[in-house]
Length: 243
Image 1 (cartoon, rainbow, N blue to C red):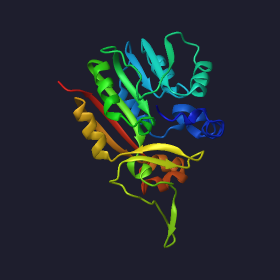
Image 2 (image 1 turned 180 degrees about the vertical axis):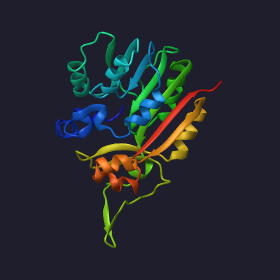
Image 3 (image 1 turned 45 degrees about the horizontal axis):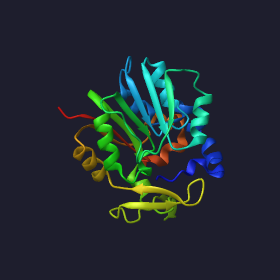
């Protein structure tokens, strides 16, 4: 079973204060890329894996999706999502992504934002996602970039008067215990090649892969993001069913 850190009171309080928790998709700088990959969802059946507060679920309905289901392990997250979603066509389900059932052939789009780096059996989840998609369906997801998950306790270091990002044991994949918002948060470190290999082994065709960093325009609006050009925070991936 996955670690349910989001129902830890201290962690949840800290998470709730993050910009993306307060502002939703407009506070997620990588969202415009993911939104473009999601494309036209009018009439689509959409599944959100690790839906959190339900921001993407509500976006999908507002964009015309016929039905949206969000799955999350956290009662705290789902309670907030339900409070914010007065729409009977959006359903929230308590479930562990390690084992959660994905109805075969039921979905046009499967989406996940910053959740899959918590999953140990990602091969199993990709296999269930592949089986769950209809012909022409697509999987779009983001994870923390492997450079971010490699250090045991990530954080910028000072070296020769400049900030540098440590990378520890990049090729040694597996669980890493970090102190992020609360001590002992377990994330699964895996390299970019592993993400791609697992997708291909599950039968997906890779469509897009972006090591996301802020654009010059985004940095002009938010200068504090300039340091993210030295270490991409997110890996963004889009895949489809192989012909």
